[in-house]
Picture 1: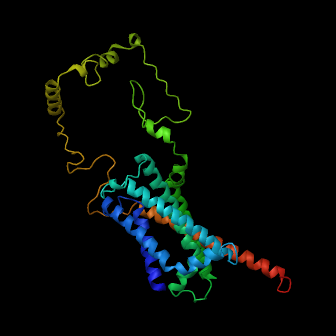
Picture 2 (picture 1 turned 180 degrees about the horizontal axis):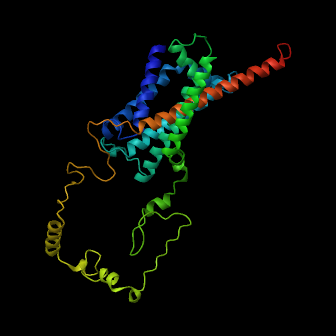
Picture 3 (picture 1 turned 135 degrees about the horizontal axis):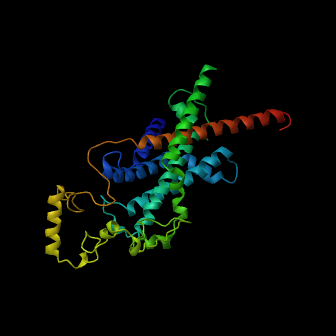
Length: 151
Length: 180
């Protein structure tokens, strides 16, 4: 399970970096499709960590480690960032037709929203990785596995 | 010890690269742009270029008044440039029929030796305004800057996490096992 989580996280990081510049990797077509796929990958990432999410949600105001609380708040912000990023991406999509969704708002607004949310989300991604660095080292067998450190 | 020093140097290099990339990509400005988005201003769009006005957005505190110079005080050579019929800025150019305008354009092109416009338009197989070039080329030039910023945030979080853990551990030790 941890191996799947690790490779999913790694591929999400690589794709996220490639998505930061729409011109970088096979143009706008790749940008839009990969943007949608990263949304699915994010949901999958949350499903794989559902036990932790449930545990912290229940004990957020009670018996919960401060570190887990910080991670939880960061994850909520990341979720909001990803949602805004995908929603604004859908609103300004060119190669995939999402006009039937009728999201409204001006194109300029969604464009700025897309840039801002993606920039903030990338920064949050970096912080998220930094806070889970021990877990990454454990998966790479650089650090010995000690249970409970992931929280 | 050598390992620790080499990791510290690596972290410093990542931080330096990250800070450089952060400023280069205008990361902060682009991140907070949504919070300073003015809905009403967006509807006004880009300010059009009136006669004698420079094109572009109006910046705060910028002086935008432009006084057309008095023609009578201009030298003949400069005044001749504003004479009617010279180029598209001439006052009569709006009254020229399309057939004559086409002839004039062809003649100008022949004189200048420039090839006709081959850029194409949207929905005509070409690239429209605001569209990105697609195709099969991979250009990771900008991605490396985002990677640098991403790595900077990661390194900052790792060391901040370490520092907080160290402080908490020290506080626990200072309080003593019997005092807690």
